Length: 421
Image (cartoon, rainbow, N blue to C red; front, side, top):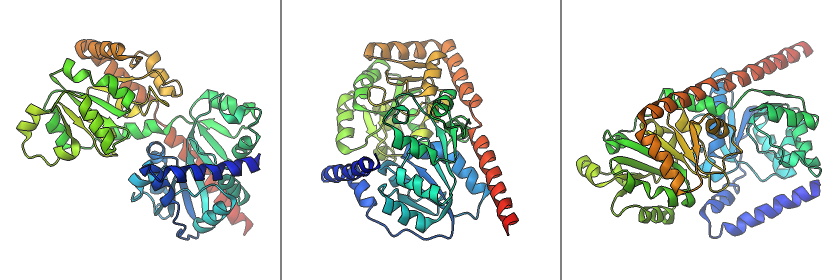
């Protein structure tokens, strides 16, 4: 199985390399891994994130760790360009890299260089050679906000190698009871339910919102509908809303912000009604801006979590594709959330639907109906807003549980070393 895994890793690289000839994101993925000049440290703490979403998810633990161990060198890695390119200059880390391709040689060279005494992975990303190398060196590996589902390879008859990877993990901090039971089913008991650190992150963000004067000017005291992380299938439905609600303002924050995608979205909306954020911040005529532009298109990455502070209703994209994006960023501000049908992999989305404070739609008619009652039933809207905010608040605390455990283990290790001297 390991041979098949190694061949698969190499094939994956060749596929991405071929795609990079005409795809910008793939090209960044390839070029970012050409640099093997890693800084060398006597010891460090290694935080790995698959992408930008996992970074935001694990950020509360990273911030707490840095505050608690301010002299510790922190090395951060990303698998995806969408994480690395946005956070490569973050002050939270001393060094930020793309995760090298998972080969035995790469794992040895990278770990030799950064010399970690702890490794923290967020949610998923299970790489055989990196985990094996850390295990051989007795470096504790923690997976935080982990979540497991029955259909994953770990629980299949052919998943022996992947179960082996899980055996290298020192401790799992999982989101729910199902994950605990699945791990127990394959003989793994070094796990506890801590919850999802995303709740800590979005709640903290909502308590200290970033002030965006340009967004406030654009809103101009009107109701605001925010469509976050949208894909073309979402936008086909959403494009009908501005004409139905002429007294509302709309913000679209597409998941992909290529020039072609932005132009396509502009053409779907009422003529001359949309302005890009990059043009908005260059404007010096807010009166004209208010009169002429009903829709704002965010043509950058990294703003979305701050936009919800100004919103009234949110639509979260991705539900007509692989799965919805982050609903909690909007929920923390008390915004009712609407999303497509593919939400069942996300516990919080299922919770919100069950509580009737989050809403799944299958088509344009259902979207219009959901927006309609939220826009016109003020009493129901306020009730939903209060309940969804309370839901987020009640689920905070994962960061505290994780750091309490890690701190205790570091203290134990320090005492054991002292006793051996």
